[in-house]
Length: 389
Image 1 (cartoon, rainbow, N blue to C red):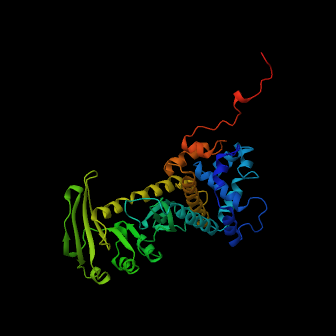
Image 2 (tube, one colour):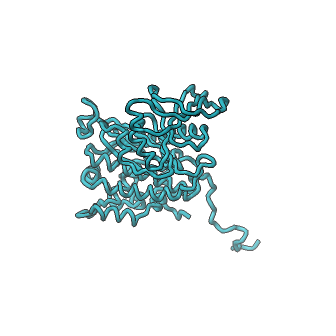
Image 3 (tube, helix red, strand yellow):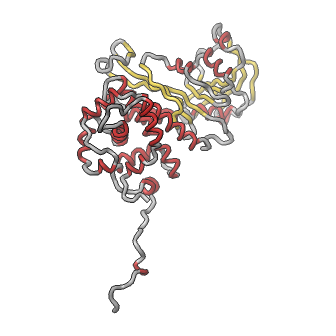
């Protein structure tokens, strides 16, 4: 029963508010604050993300138009754009980073048993980054090139549920392979990466941690074949070999054997050469693992739809990181609701529906499952008649 609650309110009911309060207290986010608290800031920014608001003035105008609905959503006073801008610039982004991580932990517990590839129980991660271009004149801290600014969003996506388990924001001049130095690798897990992460020194560290990697090889790879396995070429496989690197540096950095699998994707006319330190899985499964990387591209697509240049609500580093972390928190919150309510729509469809129905008084479950509303009226046949004819 939604009891006349707004869809937005029903969504926020799934927020672990005790955890949010702990994050605020940790960084003294509400210190000297009387009206526009961190919770109000989070709700306002979540509203802006879910409804695709374009600017601070756009947020202010739309919230003013909601009238009394604003109070029922949890925002007790009008939101001025200057108030929101000041909060985004001054309140520590770490509040929302910690809260986002708490939501991620909760979501991963919900999705840990979600089937992904048949007969494969190991944890699967896709590692990648996306670059968000910025105007260097407005964002002078976001160094990238001489006349161009940018930030990079480095993400480790848990493919069981598409939940980001690790997220780091850096300036555009940080190479993506450096993120491998900050990750703590989980023994037995698979890390799926593009060829930008092909660094044999770092990959050997992954191997030493007893984790598995699946990475696309570069065309100039130098190696010697040690052993060949038979393959069924009707499946698209071209070869499955055990190799040893022969390059002067690569052989020094990775002294052990590797596995190389070559595959031809007829549908997209694409030839893939994949390297891995796993010798147990069938070659076709390894190619399926690599092709599953497209899911992290969908995640970046959603982020970029919300974080276009004209949609950043502040130019300081704190404001940008606050907005990114709240956007990720909203994404993960919707994933939690999807799992708890057993909704079959993909996350991206759910977000589109919510953007249009956020302030309707409908059951969120009925809205997202096409379930007919329950009529709570008494059966007329059971009611007493006022008149006898």
